[in-house]
Structures are given as C-alpha cells and as structure tokens.
Length: 251
Image (cartoon, rainbow, N blue to C red):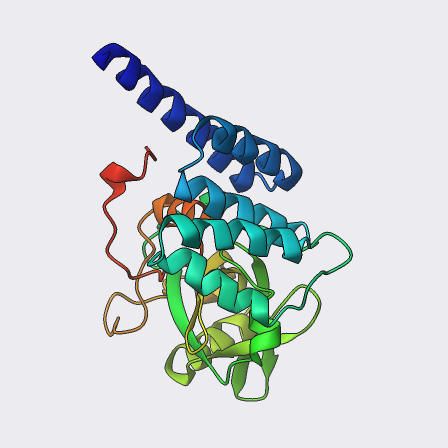
C-alpha cells in the first residue's frame, strides 16, 4: 500500500514537471492536455487547475480559464492564485476570440548576472484592462520618453514607467549605446515588477554598471529562474513572496 502511494506521488510530480515545462516553452495547447490528464488521474490537484487556467488564458479562452480557477476555488476556497486570476479575468471579458500572441522570454533571461540584471517596480501604471493581459515572463520593451523610461507591451501599449532613480541612469546608458531586454516578473492591481537585462554594453560605457549593488530597496538581482517556474505553477504570486520550493516539485 505504501509503495502504491509513493508511486502515485512520483507519477503526479513527474506529470506536473512535464506540464510546467510545456508552459515554460509556451506550448499552451499541449499544456492544456497535460493538465487535463493530471486532473483525470488526480481530480483534487489544485495546482493542475491553476496551471490549466493559465494555459487557457494564454490561448484567449477566458471562459474555460474561469471554469478552471472556479474549480480550484471549490477545492481550496482560500487559494490566492485562483482568487487573483478570477479577479484578473473579470477585466478581460468572456472570450478573447483568438489565442494570446504575447511574446514570452526564455527562462535564461531570469538568471542573475551581477551588475547587468535588476528587478524594478513600475509606477504610472496602465489601466487594469491592460495589466490583466500581462503575465509573468511576457516580453516588454523600454521606450525613452523625454526624461522618463516607459515600459510597453509587444502591442505598443503603455504598461508603466520605470522609477526615475533607475530610469534616468538607464536612459543615460542607452543614450551611450547600451541595449536592454525586459520581461514581466509579476503583475498586480497596484504593483508591477519588471526584470531588465543588459544585453549589449557599448565600449564607451565600459566599467559602468547598469545595476549598481547599492541602493537596492526596489532594485535587486534576480536569483534564478525558479521564481518564474513558481509563477507558471502558481500564477501571479508576488515576486518577493517567500515560498517553500521543496513543496513545489520544481528542481
């Protein structure tokens, strides 16, 4: 009996890893099938319903996403992930009509590189209807607007503005020839965080750190891709939330 239980736990963990891997690769239709397969064997798996909801959101199938998150809430009435996403879906309407074509960055984007990567909080945020379409891992773009550094979606929509103390430094480096990529880390109604990575340093900027180690109250290096994986397993958790990775089934 004990062996059978252990085998079930192993199988469930293996399937969960496969479902997470599909999501990490943006293979959302396959992710739907993978999570539905898990649910067929383990109907009480709340995380599988959360992952299923995320996959349906990415495919623009909002009604199906609501069903998945509602089921997660039935199983766990206090599940913060399902709660947040049902609220998010309330801003998106019933159905998108087509798959979400947002561009996802590779997990390697989130690996720390001292002095070249940093997480910044945005202000002057976009309306909730715009933020609701954003998710962890979505690629965004930096646009200089006078003295401000704006963050825009792949569709050119304003997402927010980088805090001046960080934005002004990055603008100077960009004016000097540096290039940067950026991606969403977390999205909430009142807080959005973005990871910015230096991808090219102009020779004229040699020795200039994009993200100095001091004054990191809202700017800190991203430690690894584990939190992104956690985001894909438990949707829209805050980037600075303390989580127990031992229980997540993620290596």
